[in-house]
Image 1: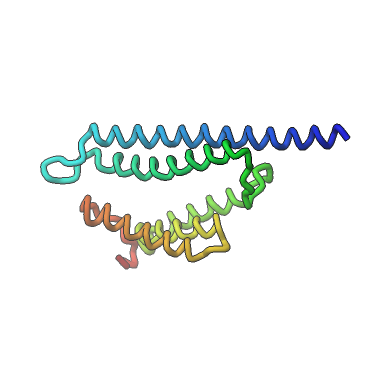
Image 2: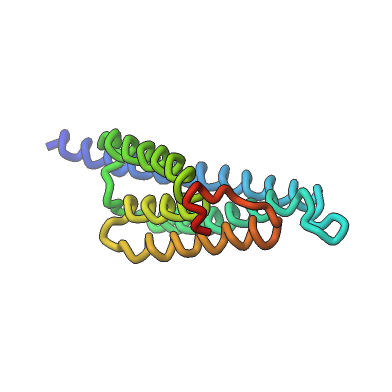
Length: 172
């Protein structure tokens, strides 16, 4: 009888500990984003009417800060409510297969860069990673791939005027 109670107590304490560590991690990522944003602003966003050396760190900082703020808010709500969210993935289960697939996708993306170009290759990688994370909603991966392509094109080709590797097929 006491063993069952002890087990449930340990499980809920484990859930709280996991949520606390998730909150600490989210705050650390938030701080990293703030450092990148401030560092970019210190370097300067413009230089002689062109993009300055701080533009990319500042943009990266914003892209880190926004989701980190949302995650901190989510973790605080979860801790306050005392509930533990149920993830699709068991945190104690081995993730070897997912890690291997991740590395294979990255290697494939690097190899495809020489054939179809960096913009298309990285966009396909982003889409595949989203689909790997949530296979029930493949449309999210497709949207993420298109957004990644537009973002990469806008930042490198238009804003920075830096040509990306196009691969020997010279598609884009």
